[in-house]
Length: 505
Ligand code: ZN
Image (cartoon, rainbow, N blue to C red; front, side, top):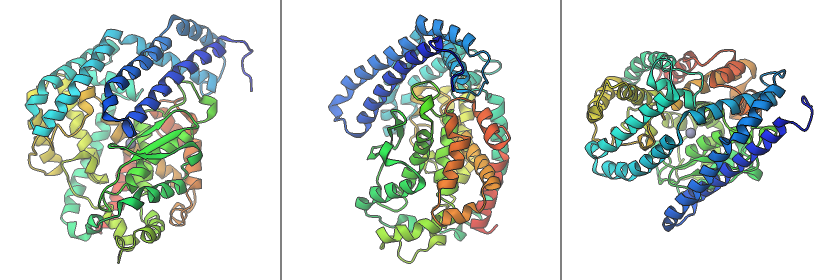
């Protein structure tokens, strides 16, 4: 289908953007290698190589040539449908170029430098569980985030700029509204579940699980979900992640643990959710700014959907547990699908975000989001963060004040600046919205899951989410997929129903 006559500015633009993508992907390969195989001595050389490749990519992307081609390409695609590949390519590239040019290169470089400096400071402060050691670095990160927001511009509140950079179209007020709904539903639900804690035992998760079989089992499981090994592989790393070098090479990593609860299975399913998304973005969008997930929040909706809404559902456990028992007979002895299902869904307030269950997880994000806003708007001083943290932890999760290590020093995110958490909750909300739409349109989803038939579900996600790549904003994508922009109600209904059943309340 040729909508425009060749040779065109659009063709030349595509060529320039393909070079940018190649440079970024070469950097990604180096990043993957750093996390999986590189010896510790390689850190400094690798930092130089990455800086060189990424600055070449940035220079090329913000070059006068790309700007000129983009101007001409805009005229060429003026008559095309906004959702066409060509129309979307030009629109999204324009947005990216505009954003890249709003931030002065010196500010971007300063942020990279400060964040590289903040990292070892954070590590040491965390080790000593002493917020005051990290506070000066945090002051600089708050100041930088504020200056980035000012340079980027925002309609109302500084956080608007930080959201606009990652989740275009969303505002602080919108996110606050979604969080308020979540909090009002979850806090009372949590109190109710806690009074019936004995109804969901999770001791199964503490049983030892042989490490040598974990990776192979997890890999077989995610291949069953649809992960294509012709275009992927699984390796070990300290922090699991998914990374792509193009449609033909989408990798994930995982990590082992001694017990069933710490085994790599659910971490692999989570990363496979990210990987299935990227393997589903069409080749026609390859080597352009459209070949990527729509946003961190939409990306997280895919990983959470597979990990939690599917992976921790009873029908999935019915399919999984007999397979798990074949490989880990001692670990699963005497356990059936129902006990396994209860154990992987035990709700228990915890200090650590990454250990949180589905019910409490968003409260961890809410407290970070509130603290970030107060810091940005000058309503909270950096020195008072542990106090503000403790207060909310008590109000939302009913927990007493933690040490700084288990409190505001637990996540690495603030060494990169503020605004990095909100995508997790958006992902949770969107995952439930998508699954509700799947249930409306796909008959007998639970029966399919219990039989290990995942193709229809994956096909739906491919069609409604994956194939669009980065064409649409998060709201627009979700509206096209489900008929409604991002809302909280489906997620609230989902947790009420699921955990009501689990705890018989
Ligand atoms: Zn993720």
